[in-house]
Length: 294
Image 1: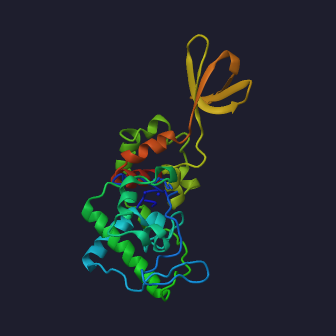
Image 2: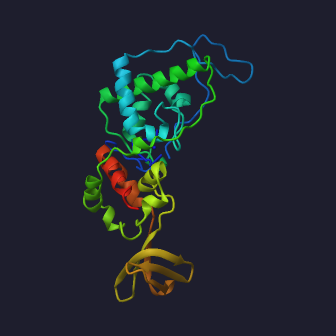
Image 3: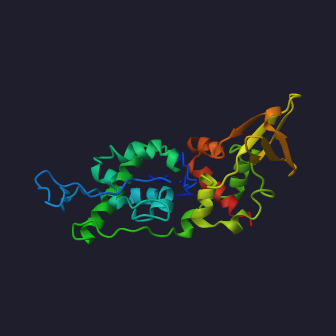
């Protein structure tokens, strides 16, 4: 969750229950802008530009609700935003977020959680009102604690690393079934082909980000010949005069652009379209499976 995937993509990542994310992101991109906190109505702006200071007194929440939110946050959000909401390797520090500061009883946080920010790598999370309330309680409590520890100021903030255990909660066998079946991953990828040794090249959050929103994905292309035959593959070359691809057999083929019709698909379309389809289990299980591809 990056608010963009627990394992909801930075990455890693990224609905989570529609997690998505990453995820990937991974994910995965998913940001809440950082800015100065808001002040109470009776606080006068400073002469240095009208910046306000947040009141020390903040709303408190039942400990049980905060604990529920902490458990949910750790599962869905910590891989990007850190366990304490203070920022992760790819997600911003929510204790310094303007959106969080402006939030009242989840009116800002709730829509971000439920709608996600797919353009930044954060999938939507299908959460109940009670779950949203617990997340709101936890995030605001963490923000209050951060403000208190900084003496009412914003503090230095900073992003932390991701605990490996946060990304190792899935079932590899279930992830393999998802990869080969419902997820549709096998239609574009192969564990013995393009993904061979994937977990040796990427690990942790970086692996999840590649899963949810790969940075260097190759573009797919289909070329239709004058005979009507269509040949698909990975785009290898394209300019004003020539179009070339690598076909499924690994062979390079090229044609003069004036002799064929071709269509290049955006590399990340399939991953972006998958965001609203992911469940929490899908993301965790798929991540567990990809970690076996060494």
